[in-house]
Length: 433
Image 1 (cartoon, rainbow, N blue to C red):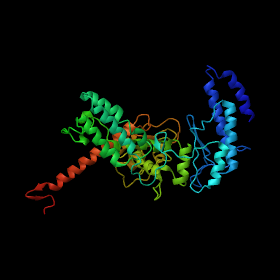
Image 2 (cartoon, rainbow, N blue to C red; image 1 turned 90 degrees about the vertical axis):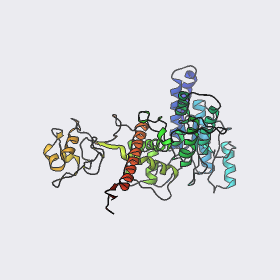
Image 3 (cartoon, rainbow, N blue to C red; image 1 turned 90 degrees about the horizontal axis):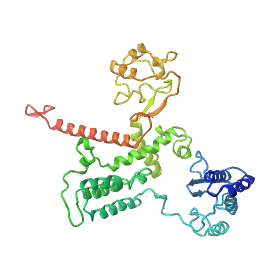
Image 4 (cartoon, rainbow, N blue to C red; image 1 turned 180 degrees about the vertical axis):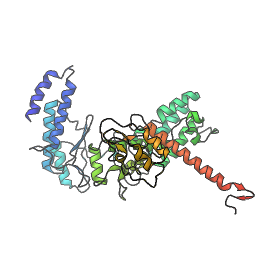
């Protein structure tokens, strides 16, 4: 409490036109965080916890918004009111009670609700349909939840259709505006196929070819061909289903690289308390958010590689660690193979590959790929990296390109397979029937 009073005196001197003022308000916000989550006469006893293995959450901050979680009791409400009053005295920032609201669990008694409303002097009781541009409550059924995304794209395209635009102008509009509309939502949720495929592609394709409600024009190329890169005969429009997965892969990457973040701890406590993210399974009653993250993990697993440090944690035969191989794993395994971890293949003192060990375990093609991997002179831990960026950091762009290449390869394989089945050899099919 004394900390806030002394800081308030400083603010009275430095709050007008001073470079340091924003930093002092940030310090006040940090003080608010400490009071909300630490012990003392005015701390919040209990917040929110999604499972017994997950951490308690007393509050979340975003810009000038604050979400506070507490028990629905008079005592907790009085504590919240006291903390906010101290924060007001320290920073000069008042709670906008006209824009604030309280949300209660369904089993809260009406008398308790009334008492808490009175203590906090906040009359509104609501959970907004959307918060920060995203739905606040998404159940198992997603029908209609994300229709606003498709509506925004449709309204934009319909507005442009009234103007006469060149092909170049239409391309810029579609790529810089229409394709950007669903990006924020797709970075957190796996949008229904109806929105990211059927509706979205229809709106974009119609506008590109000049179609409208009153005038339908011929679409000279199918949508899949328009999504090809320009160098491959397409226009480079995004295939939103794949782009959605690439964006969700970014969330998975954050869980892998920042295991100590609050989000990582909450999800780990809920879904994989005894394992890691890459080996977590999908449960029957998983939330929409978790299912979306697992969807992004599929591409993450395909493109992640282990960069060799000590080699102790890298499984020779099961992990991705050879960048030059398409599968990033050894192509073959000799009968004389005895290595289990990459550390078994390294001369640790010299920090170089043991060529004799390599010859005992791998084919010449694998050996060439392994010898291209440079070993650090210093003994370091093995790290996970994204194989398709030089800096090893996941990017949505490279992930989308990988997904597109995989899609094309799968389609080519299917077409080739069909041609082989239909091939006639000496008047009969290839099986001689």
